[in-house]
Amino acid sequence: MLRKSLKIAAGTLLLGVLAGAIYLRVSPPDLLKVVTNYSAKMVCSSTFITGRDPHQVLAADVQAPGHPLLKYVSIDVDQEAQTVNTRLFHFAAPATSQHRAGLGCTNIHSADLSETTLPALSPLPEAPWPEGNEVPPSQHPEITSILADPALLGPGHRAVVVVKNGRILGETYAEGFDAASPLLGWSMTKTVTAGLIGTLVHSGDMALTDKPSATYANWAGDSRADITVADMLAMASGLAWNESYGNLSDVTRMLYLHDDMTGFAAQNPAEAAPNTTFNYSSGTSTMLSRVWQDRVGDNSLAYPQTALFAPLGMTSAVMETDAKDTFVGSSYMYATARDWARYGQFLLQGGNWNGAQLLPEGFVDWMFEPVAASDGLYTKGHLWREAPGDRPPFEDAVWLLGHDGQSIGIFPSHDMVVVRLGLTPSKLGYSALPLAKALIAALPD
Image (tube, rainbow, N blue to C red; front, side, top):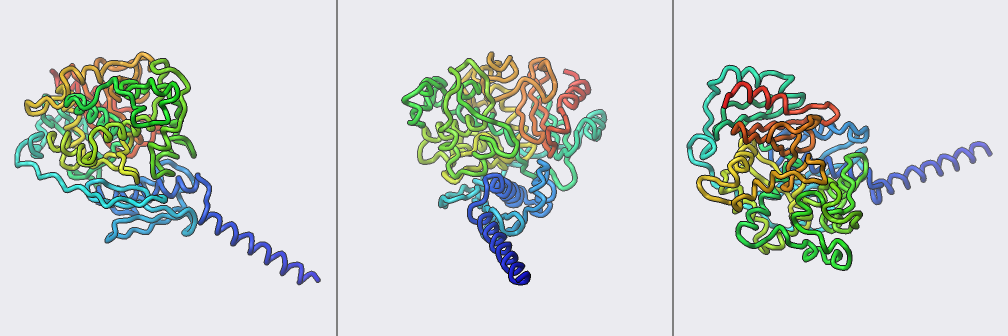
């Protein structure tokens, strides 16, 4: 009798384990899907855009958030198909990220990814930066000393480029990275989205007063119909959004659970009138991508290359899309540190490059204006007026800032741009401002 009871109990337990395993594979909880989709995306982009070893990416970049489940992610990289498949515990919550030339990596859930690709941009001529990519060794011993100071560079730094009076006067790279390594800017991509919108304002194809409800029809019947492009660029649209990077939030659900990211983001209701509250939102920037892409039409996937990257010589730049071919204009752009510096220099020069005005006259000045609802800490063009943890804002500086310690400081009073890229979680409390101040002091105006 006891033996029979034990057999029944063992069988029941086995059936429970099998049922649980099937559930975790077929219909896993959202948290597990976020873990595997995040891992697939990071490994795919770093492997096929930056050329890094996928297992090194899994061990370093994927583990950076510190979530305990990330330790149990396994990867399968298909170099020929250019896909990365991930699972938890080797079987649960399978996820796939697919690379396409010129468009980077995209997580695929249930949609069919288009076969669209983009050709590489033509190489730059042999010329000094920024016309070409020739950068002579630094002639400034003090700059060299600053760029060798671990405390100023911060933990996990990967690249630093210093531009003064339009020329690179110093740069440094961590082991495993160099001037040819495209690196993820995370939310610095938001400011590039603002620049792309600026090019369309310049051509007359968009206006800051345009209503995104023309793209998001579900807004037409309520207060969201009053939101303008300018409201969204200022992060003052009044739309509800949770930007927390914890386990599950609006931003992690958008980035890692949905083929149509803007379809997800556009469902959020308004919780305040436009220009009355500040709410930093990656959903807002990605929705703006769909707005400008609709204005461009059929050739919108090539537009960043033709409108900005080619004119600026940003030959390494790759903006990535969701599975519906909307650019993830909040988060996903890769470029070398020198190309990120080109974009910073472009803004410093008021949207002018090699004598061509690519943005409307005065548009960059408008981008740099503070948003009242943000207590003056954010600007109208997707920029910050403060470095992380540093208040009040430093002089007339503005910052492109991204997750895990990405920054471009633009210092108009000193004709300087400082790019700092790395893998530096915010919990470490690093700020690039001391680095910038040291460089400003070492390079008198």
